[in-house]
Image 1: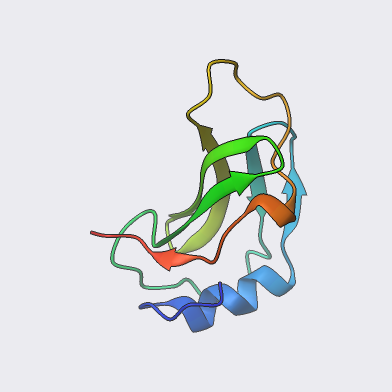
Image 2: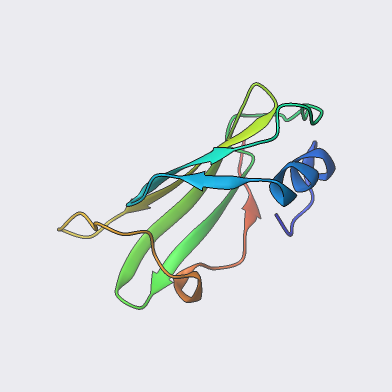
Length: 98
């Protein structure tokens, strides 16, 4: 969350306590329920291109009910990947269009 968008300050604080749940191409995020909820413009406020190390597609960050909820990797290759791409393949995040 290195880009600025509405609600990012609250989401950055949530990210400090986040833990991951699950594997593969969809990873659930568990957030401390006592933290404030963010006011975001859309459910997917930020995304990043994935291109490299044999991975092609993108990563979406989902926010549900004001809380970080899911990181999802989508792909454009013939075969579905069975793991999340390495950080070296993920590009700089950008604010998603609303």
